[in-house]
Image 1 (tube, rainbow, N blue to C red):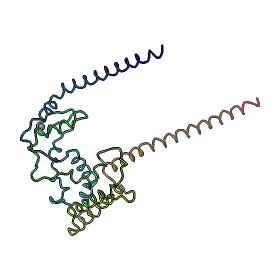
Image 2 (image 1 turned 90 degrees about the vertical axis):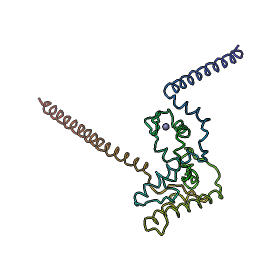
Image 3 (image 1 turned 120 degrees about the horizontal axis):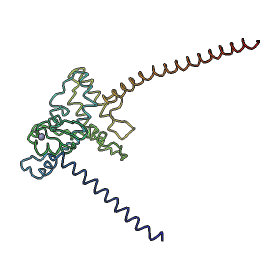
Image 4 (image 1 turned 180 degrees about the vertical axis):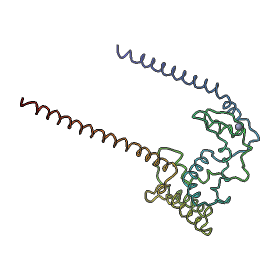
Length: 278
Ligand SMILES: [Zn+2]
């Protein structure tokens, strides 16, 4: 009896799950169609652009590279008040997608607006597609270079995947990346350009190039605080400063309460003691 029941129960469960899945996907697609028709048109256009130049540069990896430059290098370049030359591949002008990325307006979690034409999209990837289809003419393909090409030197994979991969270290690849990294340090911060350039040169080697090795366990961006990390520390110290006085007031009040309690107890025992002889 039980054996016969099992397949029927399983079948019913499968049916229920598939039904649920269908309703969920249809409701999301309905919402998607209702609120953000633009992204759909953007997608259909993807097959259409005939005069759009073919760009062989990953937008995602370029973005990762820029994130690293912005977070782990620029604060120090600004601190030194150093002007990166246009010949340096880290210069914002050498990022093919910089202008488009600066025209992304993240209104809130599910709303991305195109800064050129104000169209709204549900997700960042649809805005990316819109840029590819509608605003490709704004890409400076002729003079700009692809930031994704220096991803190897900048450790983009650290930013791209949240789970660290435990792949075997490839000595040849590590050597190649180190070479690229050192040439970036040399071009962007030439040591003969003064003390701040040579300080930044040294810093760049420590921050990015030293970790390109299969020996030891050197991690990139180590030894220096990033913007995000320092903000984290500021928040933590503010919270501690707020909590500490509260804690001490509580302790003080508690002890005062105990003291008053014992004093009252003494008074009561005194009164009782005085009354007893009578
Ligand atoms: Zn637009």
